[in-house]
Image (cartoon, rainbow, N blue to C red; front, side, top):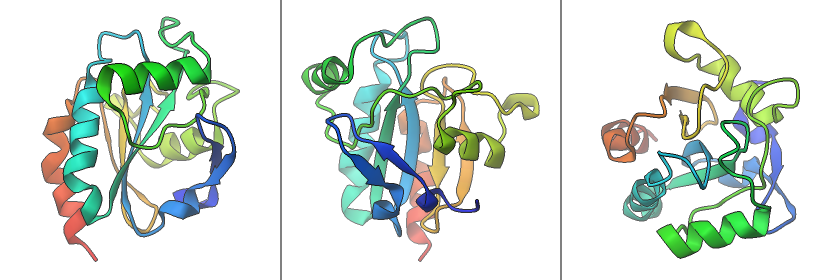
Length: 162
């Protein structure tokens, strides 16, 4: 598989969505958690989404409970938390695994396409970010510690490509 658009995932509020719906957009895919030291990144992700959405940029959030049990709630609780505390309006998907034998196909694709620090494939923690080009290819992987605001130059570079 060479394009993210070949996959689908369940939305947080239910229903399956094909990622082909985002074809032609620049995407930032993030595994999220509601009770993590990095949870405040939701605010920065929402700022990025609001700033660039009219230019064809979308953040896609994928809650995950694999790191320290930091997203134990059900999909409805996760959605309420994100909206209430951070005003999240970007698309959120149902909770998934992002590593191990049960990793969602989207994350198997992402980690194969863009390796982490020292060439590792596995996701190491919450809020790992993947920048996706308009053609559905993976541009770059960013560590948990990379703040959303530090991604603006990379996002702008991708948005400038047509």
